[in-house]
Figure (spheres, rainbow, N blue to C red):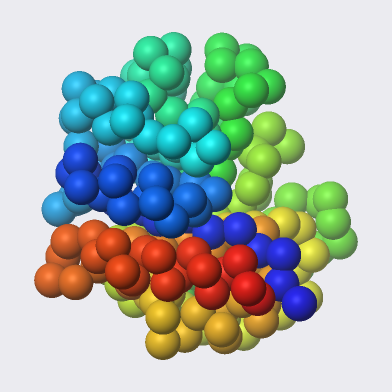
Length: 211
């Protein structure tokens, strides 16, 4: 039995918010980095205002300055920050200091078939180093948003709760859930022709709830 949660990432249209409000995933993601799904702060603010309060909004950043993340968090655009790139421990520490304990920090760890993951005992941080201020690691393919998956066998033995991303959709959702991650992160797998598909979102959420 899985207790996994689900995140639908890459919302950028009003119709996307309507779809997730009907399906009620645990998290949704607003991508502020260059991407076909990128949103501006103004668009995120409009979408967040329409979002069901039971859904946690996540801001997705790649190499964004911590000061800018703090500014956007203070505007209420998201409750969790997902960080991709070369953020140093001191930057994450500063983000935590400035935003406080209410901000959930998710640190992306890029993996592919050529990467070895060393698995120390919890709560010693994973490699690459994940500072104590991080609430969850997120394991993804080295090109986030590509719709490609890495070799999930690299995660064998990891006990720390984590988000799992990279090429997850209806076809391999059961396999992903069998790993019992804290949260399944779906983006392209919830789309048809690059646009969020309300029927896929509904089925993804329902299958996670039933697992």
